[in-house]
Length: 221
Image (cartoon, rainbow, N blue to C red):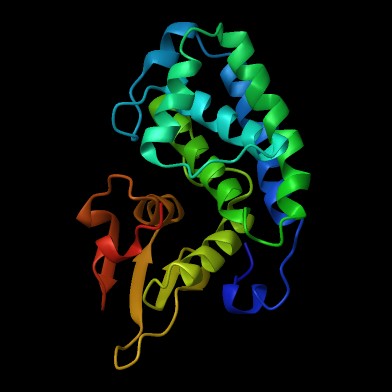
């Protein structure tokens, strides 16, 4: 992977990036799900209280809301309502909604001027939650990782995360914004742990080396 510098990426937003990320999940995750035994959809995930099926229900609901222009605030309470409404759905219906959403939400997000870009990133991260719960490889570092990094860079700026230089195997990222009077933080880690840190998913201290910040400052979801 070539070195990524998100500072430069934000000078000109790529409106197709969210759609590419969703398409990557469509192409990579759905085949896994269609081969997964139905009982495995009850596996717990890194999202407290949610099974694999619940995470997928949330993803499908969110994408449907984007595609149909019926967005809500995506608070935990409203997300839980969406999931509860889908708990009686047959699994094929749930996966069909997700499949359709991956394809239909992308163009809407592209036209939204960046306002909805974090939704695409959140969907990709939830793909990592699902892969992790199913013991599938590449959880939080699957196809589309570079596009996910670019969206994460923009989102960390909008959320005013302290400026952090991230050293990954083979590449470097700069995330967040400068804080007056505070030196740049540094984070040395791997690809999957980077995403889990910023998504607020469980990590182990041995998985990263952080100076100049604390992990709680990184959580943007």
